Image (cartoon, one colour):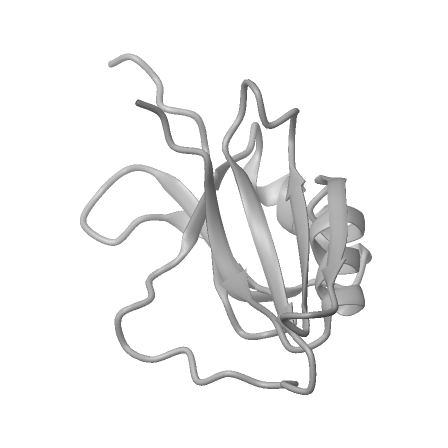
Length: 130
């Protein structure tokens, strides 16, 4: 078994695709409309679906906003330099919601950004051998 994708419902598909591709540097892998079901699926990620887990962005036509609820946590991305990644994301119009720095009660360097629908994305430095 392997993890294929995580699905997020989005209110504005083009805005979400722009965030994940232009701000976070993912690639739009595929996009398809389903007129009979009145929804569109777009898959984005850092590599092909045969070898990588990706995000499925689902846009239900006529729905422009969702309540995120209290069960959702975040998506986590490993980045080489959290501080530099935040600078780059900010310069591309991304919203940093937790500035980079050490984790409370730990040593990992992390930060959080928010996508156009309010989903949190954690940026983590690579794990280092102690």
